[in-house]
Length: 314
Image (cartoon, rainbow, N blue to C red; front, side, top):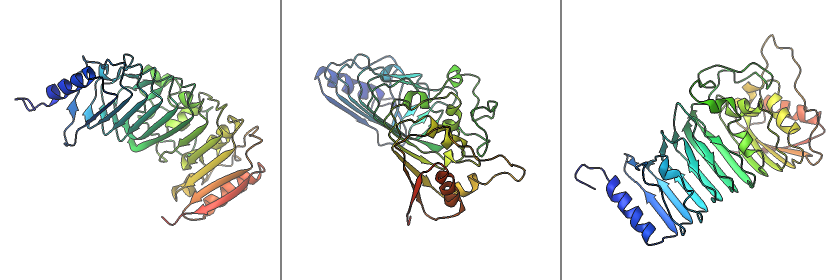
């Protein structure tokens, strides 16, 4: 640590020395409560680097431009901040793991990784990052934290045809990316998806209004965000997943209340126009078999789909 108490200078000297030594794996972990800030003027340049692990760092945009690291395959980032990062760029990475990180509140960080095969974007707060196209993607898991800024007050109603919600969690006048499909467009080529969010988080439902199609999707795991009182979100996904084979629904006790219609709501449940011929069984994981589980079972039976219920003790 230097005389000013800022460890940045020493860290960057170590990093540059590691690049000179042609290391293949770079690990920077900060175990202190305060973040180490990485200078935005020093991008990594290496033909040998294949894996980077970062933790406890306030990252700057230039450091996350890996276009000069053509051998980089794995990027693992935990407990970091992206407050001022507009873009994460790599043409070569195959696996991207981002967990317990803070993104900016007034803009979306764009992730450009066209060679990505596996994506894990979990327990993040701030604005949900915008995903560019990922044509090689095999599997992705996206689980926003309950403090994610993309919440919506209209959690139990609405559909892709409804007028765009302008609550503070949905609408951002600063960022033009909000006029596009944020997550699901980039995930549309995946073969396996896990999309889990609390009932207040509206990012998945908002994305559906841009009509993404999951042409390669074979395995899908969702939780109760997709089962509002009319089932429109789940119906829409089923209709846009023509080769889906495996669907798993993980329900908490909140699912029951999300499926309850308004007192003056007489609209029928939404049904998909068509579903995958391969989808014959849907598995529901729940702690308690309540009216919500029975309701989804009755709805699936109208689609000639069998329901298998697995109760969990915890």
